[in-house]
Length: 204
View (tube, one colour):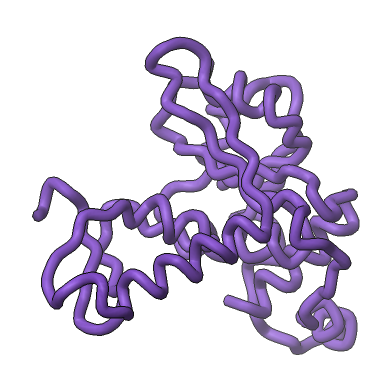
């Protein structure tokens, strides 16, 4: 998976993705979504995670408002994307995400693309973009910098492995803090260490 993400990251770089550029991920729960998230980070871009179940009008608005010029998707979902605007990169028809075999005449080139790219960046660069529900009007974008993610991850580590919570259940949002870390596991259990687990509220 890491090698596939590296290859896709190199392709994103070739398509113009650099530090702070927003790339949308428009995928259902699938291993390709993790590959897509990792590839955007490896290319230095900022992740905009889109839910395919949302209305097309919302998707179109968010893509336009965020300035995302690429959308990582599957062919079956591409029809739900706006006809104009962001360019779709189809992961299920792209050789960069279909095989991890470094054999054949292109073995040397593929092996080179499997190497981890090292984009230049700073702690204040954009890492993640998320949008409010829009229940009181239009959705509003929230820009999250790398330093904010680091601080959040550090805080969560301290909370769930320290002495502030006794062994048992604690209210939390798995989709929020695992999504911010680049691993969206919505509606799944998340093990936080020291015997604690974060679970969806409806299961608690």
